[in-house]
Length: 321
Ligand code: NAP
Image (cartoon, rainbow, N blue to C red):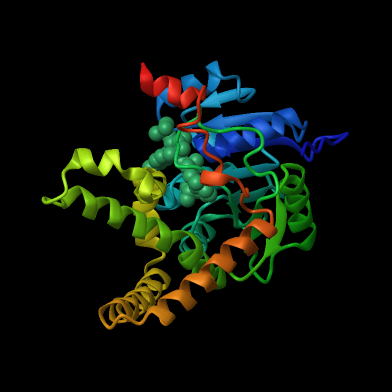
């Protein structure tokens, strides 16, 4: 799906951070003419040079204040734990009336980190595009990342309605479907739909790695039995996920407690051979996957859409090299 606009939504857009998410925004904004000028910040000289090579923007800096200066919209795309430092650095240089937003996977902690530092004459609208991959850095982004994915805004009660509409227009043009909710509710919903699954994946891959009676090479060899589907999530960026865990503690601990209880129930059903209980649960969960496919949030292809192992596929050819 490609949505193009006649006139850019923003004259000058500043992307503070140019990894997977920042570079995907840069690509879609450029391709769909959503910004007149794209100013890019990254912390390291190496990443900013790479962003330049990829021609992701119009100006590049390792100083967040320089990128944010005169911008009509500033989107902070760094790990959640770096939000305070970025907010402090850009605050004195913001243009009156500018929209300041972010893409952090956690919302309450980001609000607490950013809002106190911003002047009253800018519009702060926290946001979370619920789209991503396990890859990081400016090469990982792509123009269609947000197509048909949700972008959740968690505006504060006093936020200017016009500014919310402008930011929504930008994200819609990026391909996203818009939703608004309270920051605490967002953190609870994402704890179960995203944060807990990542923790489970990190844990299961760690457990498999620790096993002594099953060798490492056997884990790799027979990974198609299910294990490899966890390894994709467990390959996600360690900095990002450390920060998510540290900044969504309460919701995550609550979900982990519930998960442990349900796991104990499953353990009991297996121990006492309660086949009906197991069958009922597995039938119910199969229906949940169907509903996700019907909602357009997953593809209904065999082997999760993988081509691996099929005769003539690239992956198969690479494996044979
Ligand atoms: P990424 O690919 O790792 O890129 C991170 C960017 O932030 C890079 O430009 C990096 O700069 C910069 N950065 C890292 N640590 C920093 C620090 N301490 N101070 C200043 N800049 C720093 O990350 P990403 O996946 O795009 O994630 C960015 C944000 O999007 C996170 O808040 C994450 O929660 C959120 N998010 C991620 C996903 C996902 O699936 N990845 C999905 C939705 C939302 P250098 O490379 O120059 O060091």
